[in-house]
Length: 510
Image: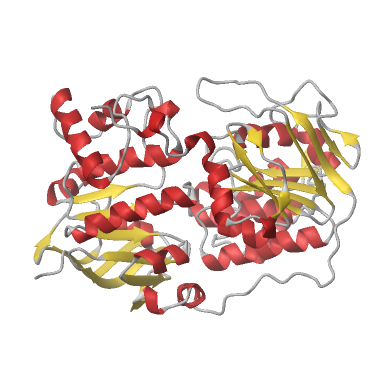
C-alpha cells in the first residue's frame, strides 16, 4: 500500500527565518506518528502546510501516492485530513450539537447530524449529550466535541496538536483508547506533544525536528523520554539540581478564607480558599482548566481586589486591598495563564513589556521618565539567561513563537527576584530543554528564600517541582499535602471532581 501522507523536501521561509528546511518523512495508513521538536523547530509550520493554512515554498506533498496541492483547510478536509487544535474554537452559550453544526462544511439537517453524532459517540465511546450547553462541560468533554467534529468527516489522517495539555490522567487514557481504535480502522494519526512519556505509550513512529530540519526518525518505544528530549534539543538534558539539606523557612505567603465574586456567566470563583507557603517552598495547585484557577491568580496578583485586607498576607503584611502595583512593590509578582494580551502586549517591544511589570522593582522609571537603557539592559539579560529566540530587546512580543514568549515572560518575572512568585502554567507550550531550564530557575529562586505558587495542569511538572500539593475543583481547594504522599491516580480523581464520568453528565440519551 502507498503511504497515506508523504512529504518530500518541504521548505518554508519567512523573513529572516527558515522555518522548514528540506523536510522529508512519511506516515503509513493506521500509524500513530509523533512529530517532535523544541520550540521553533518548525512543527506548527509543517502541519499548517499539511492542513492547507499556508503553502510550502518548495517540495512536494503526496496523498495516497498522488501529488497534491492543499490550497486551504476546506480542501484538506475534502481529502480526508482532519485537525484538532490545541485551543478549542467553541461557543460557550451554544449546545454541543450547535457547535458541531457550525464547524461543518456542508449544511446537514439537524436530526440527521444528531444521528451521525450519536453513532460516532457510540462507536468510539465518546459519551456526551448533544443537547448540553458547552459552558456546562469540562475541558475533557469539550475536547470530545472537537474530536467528534473531525470524525464526522471520516478522516484518513487526523492531526492532534498538544491534545492532552488540559486533561486529567483518566481523560488522557480515554483519549488514547479513541486514537487506538481509529488507528486500528486505518486512520493515520499525526500527534504533536511535549509529553514524551505519552509519545512512548501511544506512538508507533516519531519524526524529530530541530531548527527546521529533520534530525531523526525512530521507534519511540525503543527510546527513553530522556533520549527523545536530547534528540530534540541536540544536547544533554539537565536534571533539576536541589541543594542538599534544604530546609523551609517561616510562613511567607498566607491565604486565609479567600473568596471571589462571580463576574461572568461562565467563570468559576474561588470559595473559602486557605493555604500557607513558607520561604523556600514551591507550592503546587493542580486542576483541570476552568475550575477557578484564573480567579485565584487574579485575586492573588491584585487584578481583582477583595474586601478583606487580611485575606492575603506577605511576611505578615496585608495585601488584600492593594492593586497589582502595590503588591509588586511589596514583593509579589505573578504570571497569568494567557500569554498574549495579558502577560504581554503583542505590539509592544520586549523592552516595553519589561517596563510594564519591572519598572518599580528595578528602577526603570525615574521622576516619571522611563529609563530606556535600563529596560534594554534588563531585557537583554532575560533573553540571554532564558535562551529566548528573539532579534533583541526591540523585538515585538507578537513576533515571538508561543514557547519563546513564555520563556521571556517567565524570565522577566524570575529575574526580578520576588519574595513571592505566583505562576500559572509555567512551561505551557515550551520544549523539554526550556521546561528544564525554567524548572531549575524556579528551584533556584526558592532556594534563595522566595515562596512560589505553581498552578498547573501538568502533573509530571507538579510532581517533579513541588514540595507541597493541593487540588482545585469548582473553586474549592483540597487540603495541602507533601507531594510525595500523593499518587497520580489520587490527584487525577481530585482534579476530576464533579467533572468525572457520571451517569448524569456522560449518558447519551436514547
